[in-house]
Image 1 (cartoon, helix red, strand yellow):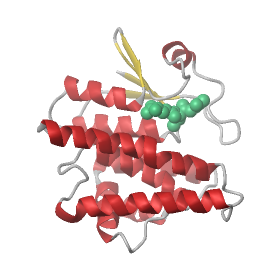
Image 2: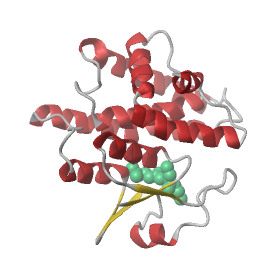
Image 3: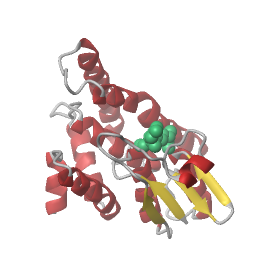
Image 4: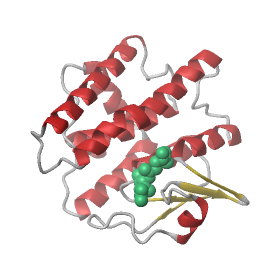
Length: 222
Ligand SMILES: N[C@@H](CCC(=O)N[C@@H](CS)C(=O)NCC(=O)O)C(=O)O
């Protein structure tokens, strides 16, 4: 399988981590990305396959699909073990909703912060950090009786880990008021698949002179 991703694509990283967790043979191609110009020029395969012109895009023979969540669903059918969705239908639906919320409810606050890096005290930035903190509180409550967000390790953990890594970079930090979430993040950061993929992303950040969150440096040091 060919996966098109980008060096700072949290959505592509979700897919890469999932492929490693499942032991799926995926070759990753990084599309052009520049800190100033972003994802330009667009890769021709990405433009051809995804009308939104975004990564990640996956090619498996004649199958050509886009969107991280769609790709994760394909992985689960392709390789049911190790399962990355719970088996019970209600637990599975709840896990899917968590993964969706990480992408579509939490991450938009982080995207807002990306555009407000020069004005961190702007009311919109303050509101985005408050919304992220409220989300952390909800995840903390879930972890009261389980090690992972949906019970066992799932795509919800992978997705929220990557989204929250960008949150940390943008100043929506997790603090001591969410100790269970901090422990969850540490456990996620130590997983070999996460270390490999998120570690490469941190190396890229370092190469372009950007800071790396302290918890990732600690995880890399083992
Ligand atoms: N919902 C999509 C989001 C994909 C997305 O936002 N990709 C970004 C990189 S992380 C991208 O390709 N941006 C380039 C652009 O929008 O031009 C998914 O889950 O795959």
